[in-house]
Amino acid sequence: MGLAFDDRWMWDFWLARNGADYHLYFLQAPKAIGNPDLRHWNASIGHAVSSDLRRWRFLGVCFGPSAKPGWDDGTTWTGSVMHHDGLWYFFYTGTSKAEGCRKQRIGVATSTDLDTWRRHEANPVVDLDPRLYEEYDPAVWHDRALRDPWVVPDPLGSGFRMWFTARVPGGPADGRGVIGTAHSDDLVHWRVEPPVTPPGNFGECEVPQYWSRRGKSYLLFSTSVRRTSAARREALARDGSEAETGTHYFIADGPQGPWRLGAGPFLAGTRSQSFYAGRIVDDPAGRPVFLGTIGFDPDGGFVGALCDPIPVAAGADGKLMLVRDDIDGREVRHG
Image (cartoon, rainbow, N blue to C red; front, side):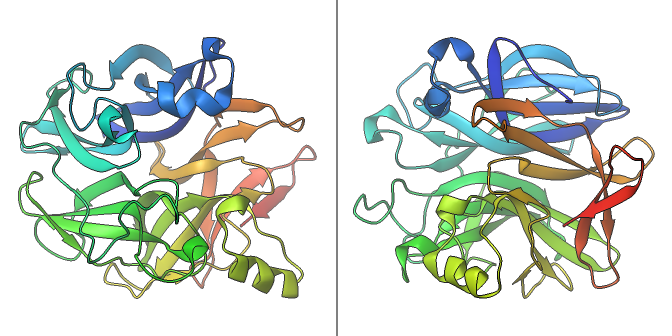
């Protein structure tokens, strides 16, 4: 197990590389709250550093909900970190107590040392466009999805591209989950654009990550059995398969799309919640590896830890696979 704590759970995470060091940021909550289902409402953001993605040095809590009333005084959730023009930019999800933590928005904070973060005065920098994405309606869904921003220099050209978890305003409620997108020239002012992935299969497509390799583009995302649409579950059953929980991906022949769901099964998926919120990163030798959250143990107890890196391979058709060694030393491929 790559990173686990005796006194806290960890789950969604993201990384930033600075020279030889990997900086890991993750949602965490104290086990003292008792029920792991309450962790989302008691979350702060932890920080750890490693040079090999295996041995981590915990640096403490680096961010959390605003102490002042505002759009992010309820929760601060998953995001991403990137470097530009001498500053580190941390994009994160926020909710407010005044709205019952049901409406999500996206903000940004900056840092020079990757540990002390200053909220930007323009926050929130991304809010929902109801013409493109579903507004909160408790009769339809439990929250307004606008979260998990993943930001990189725009692979389509100039400026910057953000992908985020969202839902469209039409269609069956259990299949409205999509990956939304926005564009910016300066990392502060963003133009929200239509979703890049098709709806219909999932209620949520969480913690997206853009990644490319050998002419193929990928959008990793995570979802669960209970957030898989009835239509998809029925289609899987006809094929003799089952819905999974974990990390999956959309694939395209370039960053412009069109995006299609990767061939099943999941890149890392089971009936239980393991290898959720997966990320692909290059290890110190430049080889792509997968990191994911270890969710539940075989008895159904929540673990809340980070796995060790697992090598990633791609087939000739672009299909991604995790390459693992079993106890007999033989190579086993999943995905």
